[in-house]
Length: 98
Image (tube, rainbow, N blue to C red):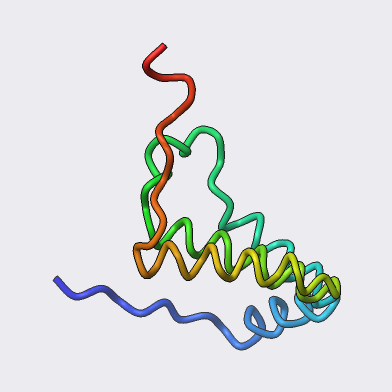
């Protein structure tokens, strides 16, 4: 079964664009970071998900970059890269094994 494409009316698209235009670039980046952050409820399920972890770190890097904090941005980009190239892994959960 093929998925049907989502078709938005032109007025709906314009409305969403207008709403986004009201936000600053930093606010948009922060919203993206919040959307991609792993919630405490999902932590155990996603802590080793490389795409989720890299996305979370890349979004955080964007926020730091826009706030003119290049050192923090680089650190987050390196974390994102480490998740993608498999050079880092999730540590064991500190609350288990006690």
